[in-house]
Image (cartoon, rainbow, N blue to C red; front, side):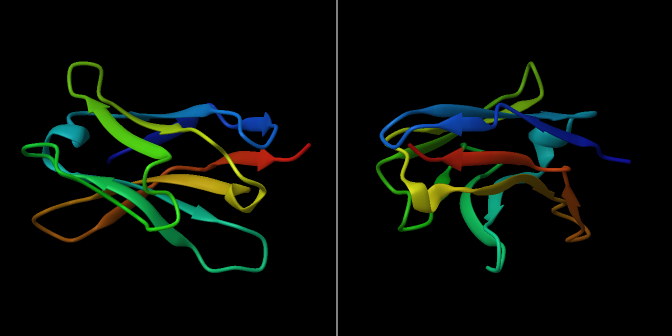
Length: 118
């Protein structure tokens, strides 16, 4: 069983920064495609960023390119999302996700709330 635990959310002013963390059980980050999603009230969940298990290839939603950076630390079994130049429209519940390569099964964390407001 894979467990993901997010942390690092909070209230920040527009233009500010936050770093989200995702702690994975076992060696999930070594073999799974790791992703960050977000869901704002009344909206569908959207993919924000992803990082592959090999070569750490990253991809980002157009809305966050140049502002967000996804990374991972295999030794610590952690995945991070550095968020800079935050905007009110970034307000959402952010979820860590792990995609199992063999089965396609998706594991989810419980989410961490990010609120961007003055």
